[in-house]
Length: 241
Image (cartoon, rainbow, N blue to C red; front, side):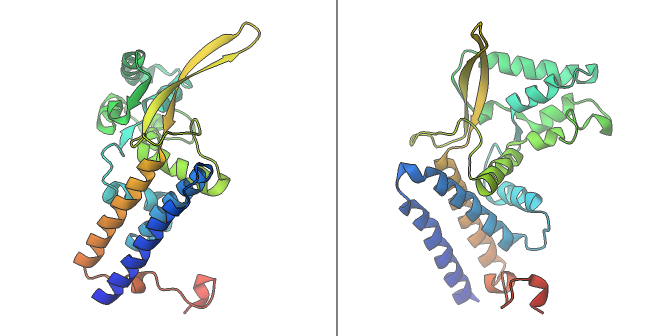
């Protein structure tokens, strides 16, 4: 058992460290794809029974990623959702969000710790299940950062592009908001908005933290990774019986 665990995590750690071998700045997008895919692969070891990848990924990040802001609600996204639904029932949460964003106006760089806790949003949210989705098809809980990270993951894996401004700097270690200004129209009207950034260093740290937590969990509970991730000769899972 111990030998099998050691082999697996030696292999996993080697694959993690080799991502850094893609050292060129031109390959930054490739590294981000590999980091989120790596997190995905670890989640399959811990939650093999999950059939929905979203719930498996988000649950794993919450439990094994040690990300303090994972369940905070993205304030700019929430503000946008509320702006698309003028129903007065949302006025209480709308006022809170407006107050929060107004306090950011003098900043150009805002950490996620400035976002609202989900519990605070919940206490200001109108009661009734029909209010859960301020925009049809999107519940407000989908605006938590762990959910947005999954959207970020999907864009990287399926579209080979990152959401947000499309850049981050080597010194950026934690997610943050940055301001952007766009000018449009003949009158050169300018608009101001916040862009969410998930830096590469954050993804690396999240993957590293999750690896250590997964190893601790597997070893403490005497789990054999080879049994959980067992595959067969056939590419169609149902045929390996």
